[in-house]
Length: 163
Image (cartoon, rainbow, N blue to C red; front, side, top):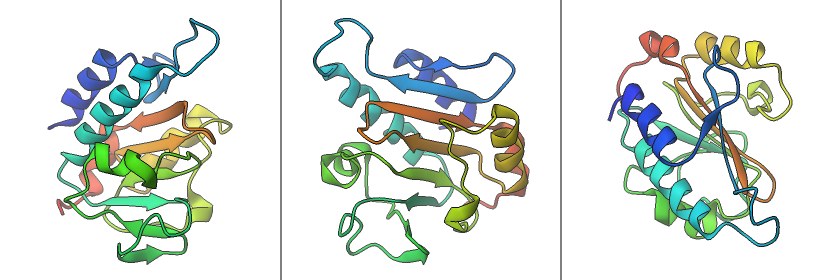
């Protein structure tokens, strides 16, 4: 998998760019019908997570519920290194189901205070963050997990060493 291929996976799974000039995507529950959960959303989320997991860098998880990360190695405060064997379906089957988490690829774990809130931060600041910290992919889940903001920034890759 490449970052270009990840763009195709995002498009194929209904994600949309929030700004043509920025690397920020939204993957969310369908707006219609207005009530009820989009049953296809979970399958689309799994496809995106599987694509992200197939990229050749370390994956870190920040903000999962207590006990959701056992027995993963702790990488920083409230941050764990996601084992390579964990695929999208397994991650969403409890660990990430509740939302309010960030999953990112990086050469090392980052201080959680630095991680941007992609639902509120300025897209320019998000882009500056991922480039400055060598984070080519960042997935940020909303509280109830019905919307994700996904940053895919190829300009962040040169600072990375494959895991």
